[in-house]
Length: 486
Image 1 (cartoon, rainbow, N blue to C red):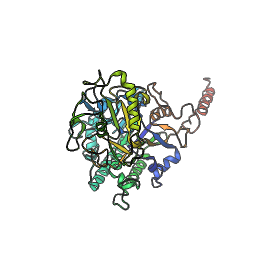
Image 2 (cartoon, rainbow, N blue to C red; image 1 turned 135 degrees about the vertical axis):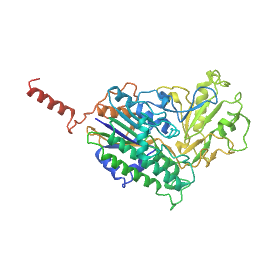
Image 3 (tube, rainbow, N blue to C red; image 1 turned 180 degrees about the vertical axis):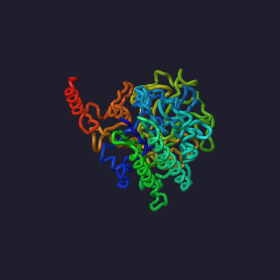
Image 4 (cartoon, helix red, strand yellow; image 1 turned 90 degrees about the horizontal axis):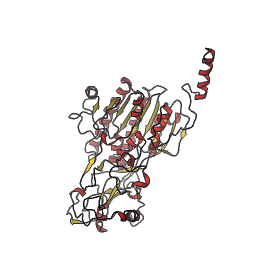
């Protein structure tokens, strides 16, 4: 049984399930099972898509975001790439049984993964003209013949040039979905997985124009319908894909996380300086990235990397080059910092309601160089600002450019399968449950390494003709009996 996964990066369940104009998604919801999907911590594109595909949490993958510490020095951060993921993915399991897969834009996928089938790079691909972005390489030329230069992302999408941004996102999406249809129709595959990154870019670029609860929202603004328009466009593309699939194909429409308004940013390193936990030899005159600060490491206990969430690191003796904290202090200091971060007030003095996680408590394994604490400021309604020089803690300025939204902990899924015993709305699904569920429905073995559970485990599956497995077995038995074999 074939499996087709259409990934909508950052798709918000309240929009997908609430907009009646999304007729093709409505049709799939009526035919199958759907619901909110709990993402991982942190709920960000890298590593979330690979957490879904491997059914392993970020700690087990050893990838905690786009940039990760390569060792315990202070200045070695590396961008995640396809080689960062060592775990067995769903397409690897199918390859063991001789099945072919096509993966398109599933992050991180640069350099393009070598697999049994076709692999096309994600938005982390530096340049599709100068760099090989497909495996095998000859697919590159075929894609160029089809759509011209293939876009993997919109460069500089954090911009105030909204007319340009919208045009570029739609232009990218048109080319990507054209390639998707060609691959589905013309190439051999048993597993297909595409991730549309355009939706994520629309959310970050236009959420403040769309959401009435956003602090920057202005009624009647010219971009108020930009996000719903893109959802309707995606719905049309999904409708086109449905025409290419047969009735025996498992279809999953899924997001890695959701989206929500961004109220502002919390300058985490600014706060650490005020608390005497991060010490500088010289305070900057203008907002300055952390890596360019003049840090007094012999006096510093804590520092943080910013982003959608905060990665908080301790300066430990015997671990970091100029460590200050003793190993015997680790647990009590970690508890103390967790409590202090949880108690941080919001901009108006009210409780910020930040969520603070210890990696060893939320991950099955903690590999590579993990943060000592992970912080979702204001339940991710506030992002983490790593730069220093703002002279205040709560800021509206983003240290990476204009951004209208942050990620939400819950994404969405809609699944149809000819043998799926589930229907209607489902509660309690997790991102890590997706790969085991797909393998279970398609009749493949679920690797022991996968941490999620099949949503249909132990349930009676329908047979290919709509009957149950038991009914199908009885029919085969009767036929064999009639032939004298049993």
